[in-house]
Image (tube, rainbow, N blue to C red):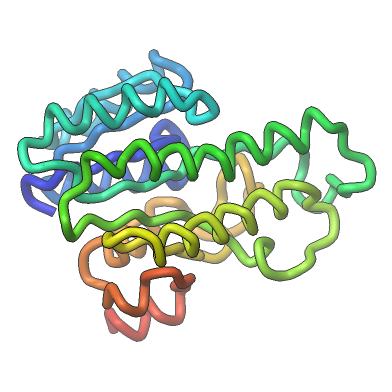
Length: 231
């Protein structure tokens, strides 16, 4: 990733933070964003403290004008364009296993879709004018997008929609767009069980840099594919 330009949304916590940090450690110029400007500044400081290079942008992926400004910033710092985009920002309004869809408010449904799905659409859309020819966009997903899971509600709907967005872009643009399913990860969204985000960040970097683009494009790569490719 040396001297490549990477955009990470949701960079202040969970998988987004781990991916942003790992990209910085691997020589990328990281453009990190989240809703809270103070948290973004802290992430930038952490990346720079380990010898990396980063720029922070306070942006809300629900607002396409924020996202447009984020990608324009990335284009300015990346002389040759944006190489990698990780649209990781997400929300889950509830507790895993305890949020049945038949009890959800419309406002909860709307914000899940606006953040977790439309946010992916906006991030990829606004990246398009600035991408290098061989750029890759890696969308995080999970089994709830494909398997009915009790008590997950419209969060699962939003992840399934994000996967569909990635597939649609994969056939309509020249760059590679795929999804990564890291399995259960301990984050604020999914709860305390599972792997540490730092342990799955290398999987996202592998998908961005080393995975076969034909296998990644429009597909979901998981732990099995990662382990087989890197063993």
